[in-house]
Amino acid sequence: MEKDEEQWYVMRAYKNETKAEKHLSGKYGLKHFIPKEQAMRTCNGKKVICTVPVIHSSVFVYAAHKQIVAFKKEIYNDLQFVIWKHKHNDNTHYLTVPNDQMNNFIGVCEQKEKEVTFYRPDQINIEKGKKVRVHGGTFDKLEGIYVKVTKKRNKQFVVIIPEILAASTTVDPEYLEIIN
Image (cartoon, rainbow, N blue to C red; front, side):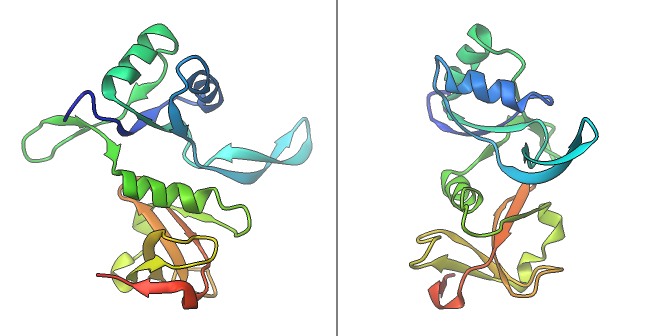
């Protein structure tokens, strides 16, 4: 892996996503994404709707490895890389998300007109679905899986970041092209 190559790193902010987001937007201006959803919370005995992170403590940061290390040294050391250990050879590597997957995921998550539902990837059987590309409409040029999702009336357009998160929403079938 090139330390100069910009890519999407999965990072942990340990229940401080708001503080991490503030610092990432500040002096360094690092591109980042925190998937959020509307949720009902009780504050001072009253129920209120607020925007909360979908995956607690997780932040996606788009930068070169050395940019993030410099940011951590100078600004905010509480942001940590998520590291995975290979099962076969015990090597560790930084968890990253390919650009096309992340762009599709952000495209679905940031859509305000349609309801987006989030799932753990193991909650959706993508083998039963078809890989599709959207042509026209709200999600133009995004790619994902068109599949029946439990507790949803119609088939859903699903975008998955493997091992991390899936997001689904409705798309009119007329906009879909099946791809291999």
